[in-house]
Image 1: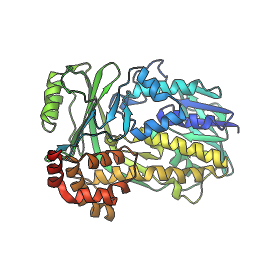
Image 2 (image 1 turned 180 degrees about the vertical axis):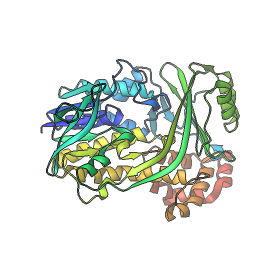
Image 3 (image 1 turned 180 degrees about the horizontal axis):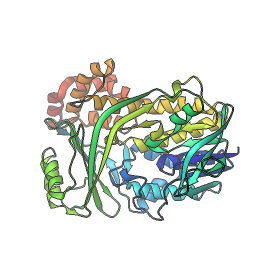
Image 4 (image 1 turned 90 degrees about the vertical axis):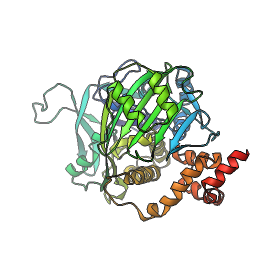
Amino acid sequence: MGHAIVLGAGISGLLAARALAWHFDRVTVVERDRLPGEAVPRRGVPQGRHVHALLARGGEAIDVLFPGLTGELESLGAPVSTLLTEASYNLAGGELARGDIGARMVQASRPLLESVVRERVAALGQVKIIEGYDATGLTAEGSRVTGVRIRARGRPSTAEDGTSGEVVRGELVVDALGRAGRSAAWLAELGYARPSERRVKVDLGYTSRLFRMPEDALGSDRVLLVASVPGHPTRGLAGMLQEGDRWLLTLSGVQGDHPPTDLAEFRAFARTFVPPRVEAALSRAEPLDDGFAYRFPDGVRRWYEKLTALPDGLVAVGDSVCSFNPVYGQGMTVAVLEAQALERCLREGGQEELPRRYYRAAAKVLDTPWRFAAEADLTLPGAEGKRARSARLASGYMLRLRRVAHHDPVVAAGLLRVTMLLDPPSALFAPRMAARVLRGPEAAARGRRRR
């Protein structure tokens, strides 16, 4: 089917390249960074030092794109946790009741996951990854994008003929440049409308540190999550046991309530809201690095599917389309599902009206996680924006559900399965679930004591 060009060799770009390789004779991945030969953080992915989650749905889906990949990660030392038996989720002032939800989660660091995926993609015969190049613009003929201009980093910005860099021709260009994605601006340059967009300001700051935990510090738990703590709703903690028997702990704070990197201050920040056993474990943990901070201003969604006109030969994926508040851990899983949607569109209809069909398919992937993240962000103190009426009406029910989930393992499992994108949100309102919720937390607690 010709030549496809992917801009960006991050997770979303590599996943897109895997999908394209089933349908194109050649796939070229253009990356501005010099890529490391091992699983280490890189400059172009500053958030890579922080907790990343491939949610249970994402783990299932990535094994379809790359058979056996989660097993390979496990063989390289990535722990795999059984949810909720090896995971502590402390939400709204209490820990979710334990129980097996029928799903596991692989806990590879972002550098390890990206390294293994990149090796898999590079091994595909029709894929070539070129490093150290910036994308500077598109080429087009009529209503079709025909390629991309690229320039080696460090070279003059303008060539002798007045153009910028060299041209790589192709039948499809995929913008996987992340939050810096250029598709909206490129559409405007080509005479098309920009997509409408929504931003949900969160002013998120998070700080991560690696630790070695004493063996008895956290029992069998391999995952920690603390969020929505009464009195400290802006603060949170996510922790995962990762390869090398290291715990990566990420403290987060929104609306300017940002955690420090200094070890003593890091521990003091955590002490204000984490449960006593987590505080005790952190106080005994051996620090393995100096800590790293990252800032995230806002979640962004761009509605490409609503545009009435689109050029052929250009699509955007990943954060170029929708950038989620990272505390919800949805981004990589959504990128996997988008890659599957892109592959399905190519399989079912080739390149005929591909952008329109793909964006509509991607919207179905994005709607639920975006609504979840945006509505959760809008409940925070100081949030700017209006919540959907349906969310306001459901907020009381969801608060009650979380409280019941502290005692009822069935409700806890249902909540986590939705959070892991395994089940739709409607599952939380099904008659049997609603009956358990409406009985209330006191009834759930009594039932748990009887068991």
